[in-house]
Image (tube, rainbow, N blue to C red; front, top):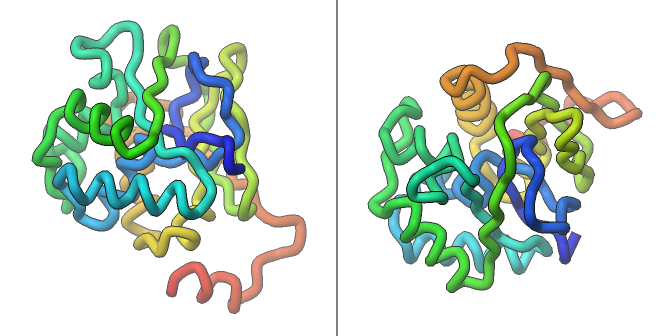
Length: 191
């Protein structure tokens, strides 16, 4: 939605109320990593694109990390070159946060510890699941790969690698449209 954050897949409760936007690894960082963008100017351009497509760009941290923006596990793995085939950013978590906010985005602080029980991989375009602090889940809105012209296998492999490296749940559930996908639907997403 126009008021919804493009936020991280993290299932912990947020200090921000706009949870109806798409969920992506590290928020806008997912687009950057998928496209090989490693600089601040490229990150700001991605933020503009996210706003043009109807969401609020964001990144997050938490109450435990120092500095706080390192509370995003995806950003931490990215910045430490732990995502195969994805070059590390040329900026740190605080510089990324500042750039996203300067570009009209939002920084959210997540509370508590990770207690996600499942990873939802959502293929129903334009829909998402809001985080529920009492029943945490990672939510990967896979449909946004088509909206942002991302490399679908690279996006989903990065999601799986992130959850695995961070010791997350090994159980995934697919959310698919009520009508089965046709071969044309699949080809459309992969273009």
